[in-house]
Image (cartoon, rainbow, N blue to C red; front, top):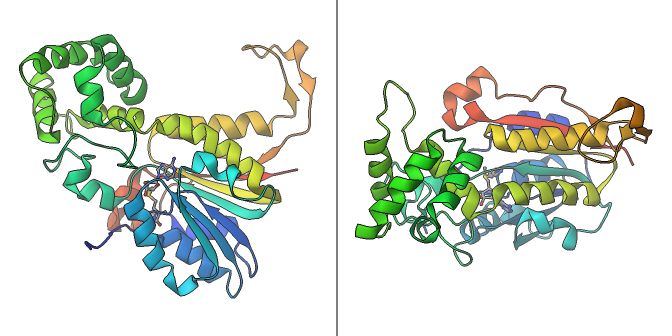
Length: 310
Ligand SMILES: C[S@@+](CC[C@H](N)C(=O)[O-])C[C@H]1O[C@@H](n2cnc3c(N)ncnc32)[C@H](O)[C@@H]1O
């Protein structure tokens, strides 16, 4: 088996905020290579326990090997974290971690189709055994739906023009490879001094759509609330503004001491309520300069921590 390479980001910060101690129970909804999970189990020796899941079977395999020394102190499942509350007992956890997005290993393996850096099939499924691939969406969705995906999940300003061009292109040849898509976008949208590849936003948008990542995140945050003990914390690491906005809004709404009906917050119509959460990190915590220099992936990481009140 190829090595599963992934350096956990913000590790020291996650440990400091989650305050590991012997006997603590953790849920890691994004096991990846098991780096964070191993650190949490080690710091809660000799009897800390971890419920861990990942959608990706290759990640579960890697985490199983990484956590072999903690056998008997963890339960690992190939599942989405949106379903954590279905198998982790309610109110049982002293800390929940969601380290969102994809791992370096997933990006590095061309056959997973997440990256335009190497050529591979346009797949992008975190769980390759289910659901449509990125190629399925590109080849089958009407241009208007593709444009919505590019705009909503990639904040791509030229979403309509690019979607129409894709619709025309696929008459001649179906989309099959990452290179084919990256080259088409590069032709349609020259770099013009930008540092990032012109296809970056389109690849992000397709990945979020294929895996319904934002829907899973909303459900995962609700699940975290259910499985945490009162007084315990969730730590969420986001890698782009769409994820971070959802995490921030989730904390903001639950930390309020009032509620209201309907979409508009009219101060006169507020009803008092007990805050369910405490916002522990007023601002998102970035990786320090040393980590950013050593691990470029950490440059876009933002950690937010909330504490469940009751
Ligand atoms: C950044 S990596 C996590 C790395 C991990 N913390 C470590 O130390 O190695 C993100 C992982 O989350 C997984 N993932 C993303 N969305 C998920 C979801 N909704 N449910 C479960 N796993 C998910 C991905 O498959 C990937 O393995």
